[in-house]
Length: 233
Image 1 (cartoon, rainbow, N blue to C red):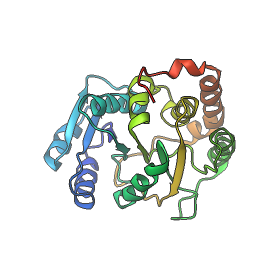
Image 2: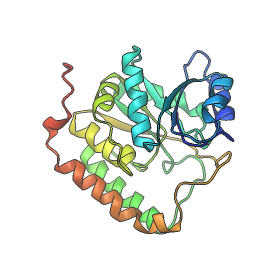
Image 3: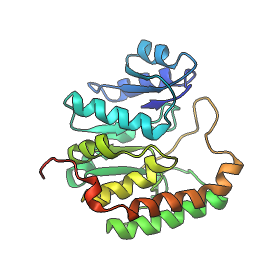
């Protein structure tokens, strides 16, 4: 659970995950927060990995994957700290891991009423079409941050998870596919943020398409051999 200045929502989110999914371990990666995110998460029952400064979602996720591999975990599920992801949807992600290495919780696959519009919607549509062809299956929500990673993807992401803007969603999927991972999706519902301010403002939405496409193109330009992990299949 990557978190940056989410003291208003992270405690409730951690508590809900622990109630809905008994027996799981929750790791909150405090991405250089200047508020009491780490303290609130700890009080709610999470394990907290504190980064000394803000790296962005990608950097926080890579740190989380490295923690998971170093501590012997074989599956990791990403859930946002702002409460938008419903932990009740996690079992469906885990079930789908039986036939995939990465499973996306897709907002535009027939469940929930989440909507997007304007440049951001067109970007999502174009990216979904392009990555569906690369994955050999229909993907409708390639920017979803609600996703599960199995053993192969866990090791891959611990070494190669991108830290750049949009890399944590678009480039990460390209890296997984180039490394031979199977990517699938399950429908999921998205909720409103429990607190805080969305990261995308109108200006960012206006340049979203260009940045997203660049992230995908740069990932595709890198040789597939770049993503070797040294772990046998």
